[in-house]
Length: 410
Image (tube, rainbow, N blue to C red; front, top):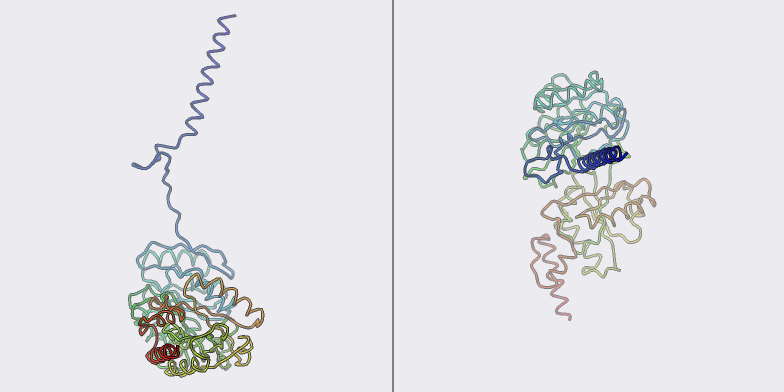
């Protein structure tokens, strides 16, 4: 009996030991899988491939692989979403060209939303193979065609075939001068009411990197496409039977105390996007401005006189009332950084409630003016600082005179 008890106890002890060792091995990290020099427990896993997705239409949520290739820079999702919010969900019957396809996200998005024909231009062999695989996977070869060559080659081919495109996406790699090189070849392919959407961050181009710029073909000389606008309520490339492009008036409102170089830059860029820009100078007496409303209006009119499609008005009261009076469809607002966003987002929402047909377009300043504000300019000037680089000469002259008069009056 005692021997049998000892044997049972030995077996129990051995079973317990094995169980403890097993649990300890399960709790320990996989040291064999750890990379040399890494802490125990660090298991290296293969990185998941970077992907973007088609946003809407029949192929919604279809993933598109971003091939690791030099210069491949997919259009950011937010930019693409904003763009196709403008263009709309239904692109039925339209002809689209994507001159720098990359992932194909722009051209395939258009096809997903019903575009009748889409051409994709791509020069990188690995990217070409991926694009062709996607086209075959989507069974889209009847509508989507891959051009294995550069943008100018595709435009030349389409021009010879007599193809006229309703939408042309021009999103080249940044800072390689490709945008200026390809634009002269674009006009012969762009339909009379077609639009080209181009994005560039070249140093020679003063636009903020990543800004979408809209051009419209309207019997213009090669490479000199007339600027137009495309808020969500208007599709100038629709109605090829003879409907005229809708005249788009945009309002840029503010106190402008004083008008800065940042304000001027935004007006200049907006003037290239819309048919007419109205700079609305608010009375804003509650802010105790340095310049009187009539002075600010006169300064804005003089500083912006070089832009033929810009006019300056004064207003007080609700901005939406002015918008209706001017029959304006778009409100332009500047965003210097995230600190502006919460207020501007709230303001845009309230304006839409008061005027549902209103579209608010946010524009970011270029790097040179991102930190410039009228408040800072005013404070620096009041304390004797030099603000000549932040305002136009006429504004600088009047600002100095105003501050000198204030000191003299004190």
